Length: 229
Image (cartoon, rainbow, N blue to C red; front, side, top):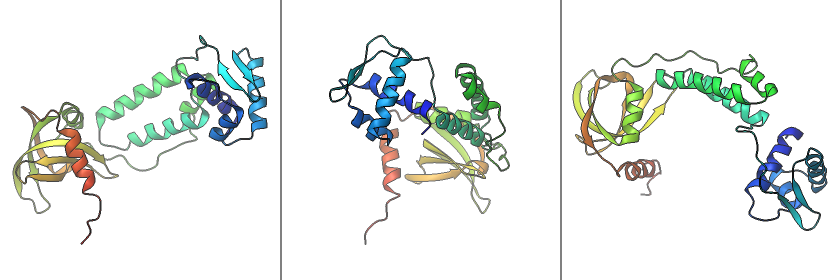
């Protein structure tokens, strides 16, 4: 971990602590030696960060000290850059637009060395972007998941057979070539996956399943576990 990142993390640890924190505890969390923490504490105090305490008794951050609205380490900034680049490969136009807005907002408030990470060409997510599905608006689907609202789907299976389904959407999975809706299908009375590129039409219904979403997601996750014979 770079020293600048470590100094920031020390401030965060002290800011969130409810009492004195020893150098040994801080060093254990950051995976550095106690001697390094002593030097870092001294450097922060020299920068007028109001840290009080000493060896053997621990350190506290005096109340009233605030950080800028958004402080990120170099690694955290790079993680955001890669994540936003990966969003460009999805067929979700709403999320892609949101990613551009997030990029602009973050680059406007982080210190200039970190802001350069957003304009650099050093990090890429390679691969072609998948097209947006014709029969469904993924933004509408994400809203239905949040609101626990039922959807009426016209779905075409692998053999080309069409069926009308009323579903309770609980999750959206993004793959490299498509996206899948995870939903409770009222026709099958079971959880089913629906490929978004096979949905011919999708309409929100004036019907909701409020309070059931988490239970259905737990049921879905339990289905991942292999069953004993």
